[in-house]
Structure formats: C-alpha cells, structure tokens
Amino acid sequence: MATIKLYGTPLSGHAHRVEVLLRMLGIPYEYIESAAQRASEDFGKLNPLRQIPVLADGGLVLSDSNAIMVYLVKRYGANTPWLSDDAVEAAQIQRWLSIAAGEVRHGPASARMSSLWNMKGEIAFARAHEIAEKLLTMMNAHLAGRDYLATNHPTIADLACYSYIAHAPEGRISLVPYPEVRAWLARIEALPNFHPMPQSAIPAAA
Ligand SMILES: N[C@@H](CCC(=O)N[C@@H](CS)C(=O)NCC(=O)O)C(=O)O
Image (tube, rainbow, N blue to C red; front, side, top):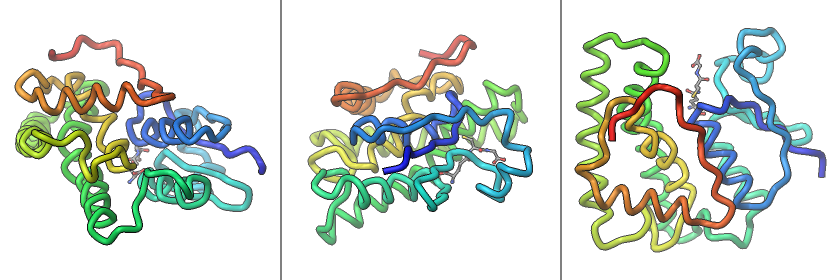
C-alpha cells in the first residue's frame, strides 16, 4: 500500500488521536507537520475548512479526526476491537465521538486553546471551564466501575476523548477532583504502542 500521510501539528489533540490509533494499529505513516501550511492554496485543496488533521491514503483525502479513525479501523483494523458491529456498542461509541466533538472540544480543548495561544476572552474561558466541569463530573461518575467509555474494551471513543482531557490542566482545569477520569487516562496510556502528545511549555494546573 502507498504510504499514508497524516497532516497535523504536534500540539493538536485532534491530530494526536489519529496518530495514536495509527500506531496502535501498526500502520506505517508519514507525518507532515502542517502548522505553516494551513493557509496555503495547496492545503485548502486538501481541506477547504483548513483544519488538521487530514489523512491522505492513495486517492483518498479525508478530514475530521473521528471520521479518519472510523476509516482506519474499517479499512485496516477489521479484526480489532476499536469499533463494534453490535447495535448498542456501536451507538455508545458514536455517543462518545459526539461528546468528543461537542463537550470535549468546547470544554477542555477550548480552555487549553485560550491558555496556550493567549486567546483568553474571559467569557469564553469561563464558559469552557463550565462545560469542562459538567463533562468531567459526568465522566467521573460514568467511569466508576467501568474501565472504558463505550464498551468493556478500548475503542476509538476512548482515543477521541483522551488527548484534550489528558491535557486539560494546560487550560487551567485541574483533574485532581476526578480520580476515575485519571485512572481511565492511565489505562489508555498503558495500552501497547501508546504515544503521548507533547506538553506545552506553559505551567499547567495539577
Ligand atoms: N472536526 C475537526 C476539528 C479539527 C480542528 O478543529 N482542528 C484544529 C486544530 S486542533 C484546526 O485545524 N483549527 C484551525 C481552524 O479551525 O481554522 C476534527 O475532528 O478533525
């Protein structure tokens, strides 16, 4: 197969979730650091929304991290447990992918973006913290007595939610009050071929 290309940036949690899955599936790929390219005409042809990640696999060019993960598992991970054909399990996975694109994006990811890139509009920052607190409280209760978010084994739902929650302290969101969430993060980090997202340079909350 032609080498898969992943366009991303090292501090993007959206790109990180795809990179972790590629590594866990053992799929070789070329990583194309795209911070500087995003404004270019060529990148606009790959994704008119000018967002990373983008995956190129032969003739296929695909954006949206969650869509990319579905593609990778369906295409290359047929006998792996990252998705499920069971009606309830598939629905639970989709539910958490939606939470990743909703509450995770608008809570911990937004707060981190505000802190890292100095975009701290106070109302937006406070709102991101409010969303994150509601989400983390719900996740902490959900994870009591279960190991993973959607099923009894790790799925792409866990990877979709992992990166921005693990890095929530970079947005001044402490994970100390959420022990079940911290235990779940540690379980993801202990999976074979896990690859961490780099810490940002700024001092983070605990
Ligand atoms: N729904 C997209 C969101 C991706 C996204 O927001 N990427 C950010 C970087 S983490 C980006 O490229 N932002 C630039 C922009 O929106 O203009 C996904 O899941 O991949």
